[in-house]
Amino acid sequence: MKSIHDRDDFRASLKDRKRIVVKIGTSSLTHPETGALNLIKLEKLVRELCDLQNAGRDVILVSSGAIAVGRQAVHIDHRPRKIQEKQACAAIGQAQLMMIYQKLFQEYGHISAQILLTKDTIDEDLSRYNAVNTFEELLSMGVIPVVNENDTISTYEIQFGDNDSLSARVAALVRADLLILLSDIDGLYTDDPRRNENASFIPIVRNLSEVMHMGKGSDSDVGTGGMETKLHAAQIAGNAGVDMIIANGDDFSNIHRIMRGDETGTLFVASGNRL
Ligand code: GLU
View 1 (cartoon, protein in one colour):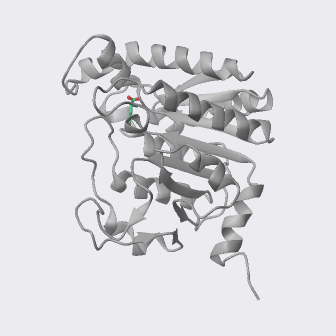
View 2 (cartoon, helix red, strand yellow; view 1 turned 30 degrees about the vertical axis):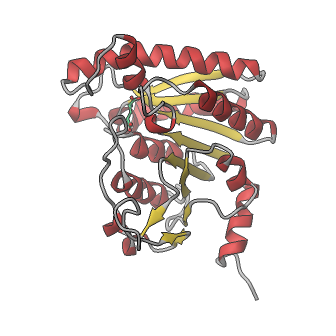
């Protein structure tokens, strides 16, 4: 007899998940040739998220891209390294990015809202409590929160540093039913498939400790993550009882494929109980 722990049944159970956090990285939102926003992809992403919400789900988007968009706006052709430069680019880019998101969500009759967090917002009891209340209120109003790190004020001591970890903390905070990380790779492989043609794809992970060593850093010119931060995110989400999927953000149809139970991406089954 099959149980929920069999792969097919587990996948099928994703159809019933109500509260979904979707994280999108900078490299999935921008043209690799220029670093400018890929508006066609952005539009498709928003359409997918609106459709999820139309189907009765709570949707939260964690979007990177602030620094990249700001960098474009002021024609900085190198990746900002100095903290003030990053902060300034984020201040410019976050506002522009949000303006575009709001316009696109509005076109499909949905309202989006901006939530900017730093690590200490979640570490400190009072600000965490306030953040949870705001998320809950927005979701009960049918609004789609768009979250990013508050890069403009964040420095080493208070930053998440990457949006993979941020999205996992958010998923834990709102007691999400599923976290979807959209990246520039199909999911987890035994080795980096761009360097090792014998690397094989892993569709499901039940024991995270067995795969933690497969994490590699990022070689992207715009993103911060890489597999290492994604596995770390799986750890945070899993400990909080939130299942997580890494899938390719090259094709945003992967969002509805995942939600209808298709074999897309790598599924990390949570080990912990929902906090
Ligand atoms: N918060 C950064 C941004 O919006 C991105 C961090 C990341 O790529 O993980 O530009």
